[in-house]
Image (cartoon, rainbow, N blue to C red; front, side, top):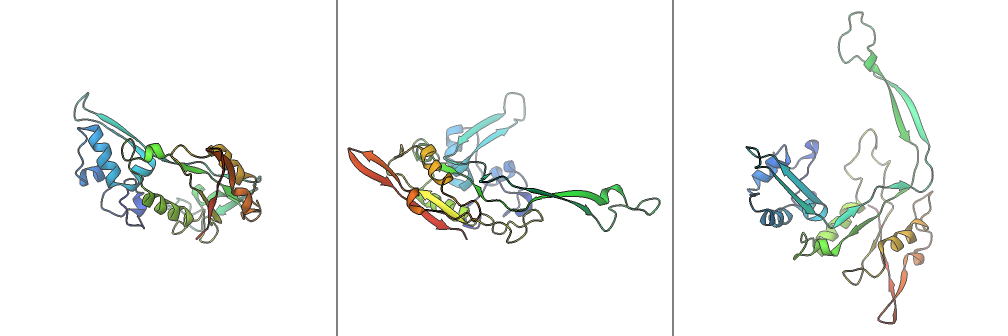
Length: 236
């Protein structure tokens, strides 16, 4: 939303419009679901997150048999992050200074006691990809190079304006964003091989790349030696 793009799935505590649900947002955009193919194209053109990550639109009809379920497969996938080393978890007992409600005897209620758990330190890596077939205008969502640049900037500033008691301001940061761009739609090298070069080359103490030259992959194409070089982008 910070880039000016319309977003379909918005959290209630950080909404950029007056709508309180996905259905309300669809109705507000005046999109009709009678023609599934037309609706997919219009939804992808209207909302950035739909053409990036896809979305399932399952809605009940007014009567039996009138419901719809329209799936949109998005080209962008982002995997679950994992720590490079085992992490230690600290558990702390917390006590609220006041009761939530009055008690008969004036003593502390049971809701004033609790536990809070935190990871003291960890360096995490997560992988992602953009499927060119699912991104194309003809067979996919129309996810463009300009859209990819906006995704790149969003990942670089992932934790900005995202502070909470679980993630206090300044406690989380993106150290580096590593971006490989292939020369063809089918990819020069498999995603698994690309990901492995990063997994083995990140310092688990700092998150910095040990040797940037090792992130360049070599391959043959048309009997010629080629190389796939990454763009290394510092976090925000």
